[in-house]
Length: 235
Image (tube, rainbow, N blue to C red; front, side, top):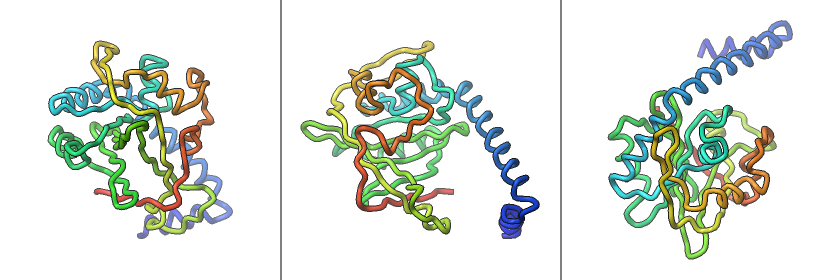
């Protein structure tokens, strides 16, 4: 409580708020550099562990979002991407509880769960200080869908409780029904059968060109949901 009070005072005081702002920027830069180094050191090891663990139980998974983009476009990790994105196709056998059992048995720690309409649509784990996001996809006859959370900058947030109530977008893609194994840096990993097509649907026709201004909840495939979702934090 005392630490939080001191932060608020430094942030609001006209003599110290600029210093506080500069220190906050510097702190974020240091953390970002550390996370980037961790991705380079451990990223492929984590992908390999996930690949072997999921294949053991015949889980249909694939590299997703920024991780897929980096692997296909750059044969590695995007420099500003600090986590690993995985998509899992769910069915009667494969659900979030099954995925949790597998990953937690390998040492992954559950950090967040994202709930929309009383269903867990995404989990975030941490392993070797790297965050791994698992998006749970639902397939129908034509499409694959997943859901991502964000905080609308136009929505007022006044406390921590409200920060865990988040806006949601539904992302709709052509049905992902097959995957294939590729090898990068000697590491096997799974991607959609047609990764370039999925990347085009996710990022648009210009997906081959880096875009530093990309906002995921404004993607071509994103539809804003009327209901808010809820993020549960695990200590």
